[in-house]
Image (cartoon, rainbow over the protein chains, first blue to last red):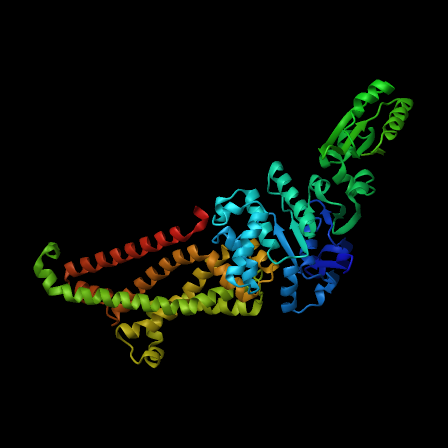
Length: 338
Length: 227
């Protein structure tokens, strides 16, 4: 079995032609490993949705190859492509359930499409509803469910054909934070139990941080950066990455042109360190918290803080070296000029 | 006009009115069925071949649209006269209930095609995309997504189509098709039997009300989005 379940090579997608042509994706190269949860993040209009639709060929790439499970999707006939799509299913921001069918019949739908006998499909659908925690909602109609429940039904439906890859297109963007967390937990759980590779498209850094092992940052139709979430998180090296990674998602410019600042990333130190307090007590240096987006995941601190350093260069240097001496904390000096 | 409350009126005209109502219903129902046989596939074809459809085909979409618009721009009474030779060829007569059906079908089919197109266009494009992402064929998307998801809307459209065809049958009555329209013209207008005019109007109003309320009720009952 190939280690890479999805390989994207020199992918380009252009809409329209001539002067009005829009280059949605340019020269994309990505390798997604079997069994991982891979994130693709970018702001609106970065090309994320187009990229994920190129993976199951809902959009046909203008150039380049998309190899899924060893099969070049771009070379398949229409019929072969329909078969291949059972292997790489998708969930959506707006759930896209069939509103006139019960939840159970929704989960049966992909099995109906490939001719699974009705009673066998129903049994399997009931198991899947159980798996996503909605065993009691089999006969309900989608309109009777909450957003989170709808997405669970959509997940059950996407798993009905035992896919190797599950594409999630902004799957949590329409959900509140609590529901988002529970859906992400479910995806993580399914990834672990079933070994299904999950590709997560999102504009929310917190989603990536929560479940992804590796991430690609898409900006203006190109991959600005890719790597492990930890690396990108602690050392964003491109503007696109910084825009996404910085607290508040905004550029530091908003804090003033000459702010001498340091970006501190918590990379899962075993316990949350009261860093700012100890900085003041042990070094006698007071810093300004310009912004923070930190969270506690499984008892480990993750996230970033943007600290404004004192004007005095000695104090600033002292603070910086103190921060850097902490375990599982990375610091990077940032200076922005308007 | 108060004679409509007398037994004499009903013994004189009762049988005529019953036959007229029956003929109107036969023309309406038979023409509706055949008009849907033509119009439903046309409407589906429009949705599939439109620029953002799942089978875009600009040429076919434009040709179908053009034919439908031509069909819709002819007033029914003109169409009926214009195609009389064709009608004779198909059903063997130009008049009566039978002679009214071909022009009714040809006139209503383009209208129904547009109604169907509008109903199917209400189906969420995301749901269609989801079906595509699961490997559904075009035929499966039509049968298992478009038609079932649009069913409540198609049924409401059905009531509009039937009522339109009912109105056409009254026009057809003017040139020898029989039915309530024929009675209204011959007795109510030409012989000035005001009570006949009144009764045919009441019957037509009642038919429309009954058809509309049945279809609205069915559409609401089967729509699972509302529960």
